[in-house]
Amino acid sequence: MTEQKQERESWNYESLEEIIEAIRDQEHDYDTIGLQGPDGIKPKVIEYANRLREEGFETVIVGASTFGACGIADEKVKRMGADALIHIGHTRFLHPEKADMKDYDVYYLPYREDREIMPILEEHYEEIDKDEKIGLVGVTQYMDRAEEAREFLESKGYDVVEGTTGLRTTETGQVLGCDAGAAHNVSHKVDAFVFLGSGHFHPSQVSETGKKVYVVDPYQEHIWIEPPNSLEDEMQAEYARVIKHKDKKKWGIVTSSKKGQNYMMAVEIAKEKLESYGKDVYVFVEDRIFESDYKGYGIDIYVNCACPRMTKDWRDMAFVSPKALEVLDELEIEH
Ligand code: SF4
Image 1 (cartoon, rainbow, N blue to C red):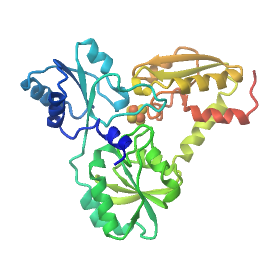
Image 2 (cartoon, helix red, strand yellow):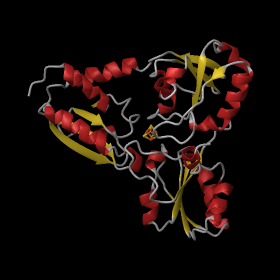
Image 3 (spheres, rainbow, N blue to C red):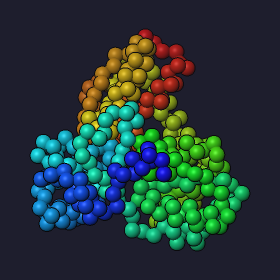
Image 4 (cartoon, protein in one colour):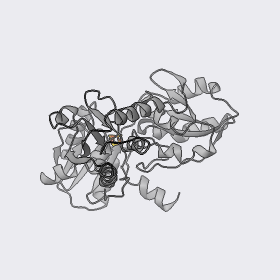
């Protein structure tokens, strides 16, 4: 294991007991520990708080749900006197613009789904074409079984290429809604991907590599195929929004104050580009971004420089990704 890989993985723990041991071993002298988790495991958060209290720690819990480790609530718990934070649900998030994400002690306890995935792979693997070189990717909930899946596929004669981490991720093959880098990094070596997880959202990010994706789906209980480039329509819809508003004078750019969703370089690049086309640009910041907050400013189109996932289904206002601004270069714009 390379030093870099070891460093990346050492931030993630598999149980609260491991974290308690680390906190004690490292003699940090913590008194108060913050806890933060996603919806759906709130009873677990209380259970963890009780366990920490048994160990003599004071606890403070972040009330709002978390969608990713991009939103570590270090500042909130620090304000409450916490010495460290346990972020439940996700692996450590690396900032794509290299902003410092480790200036506070955060212990990551990723959520692993109890639902069995290996029996689905074992029962349906023959649907994966054996002549194809495979890249193995998936979501955090199942990455604890990625090695087992790889060994199984190899034992059945599949050629599974060595995986990598993405730009924001710490586990090999791990894909986030904002980062399919683990797939892109190996896409030139593979014919198709095997994806551990469910739903279309993450497989469609992987399909942007131009490769088909075999989804080993523990909810559907079979393997289905996400076709290559399945996000193409979505991108075309974004270009259409930019084209529709191309002559508007006022444009907004939205970013988040959440540490891992605050993309200042993206803001600067988008702002510069829009200004080069004579636009008046207004930059907005908010912790969690709601569509309704952006009504009433007299601005019809906003560039989302926060979590790319957030604005995807919004229809009242026109929100586009920074990438969609590319289309401006091909248009005649009224200055
Ligand atoms: S998709 Fe959004 S919520 Fe999920 S990790 Fe990325 S920035 Fe965070």
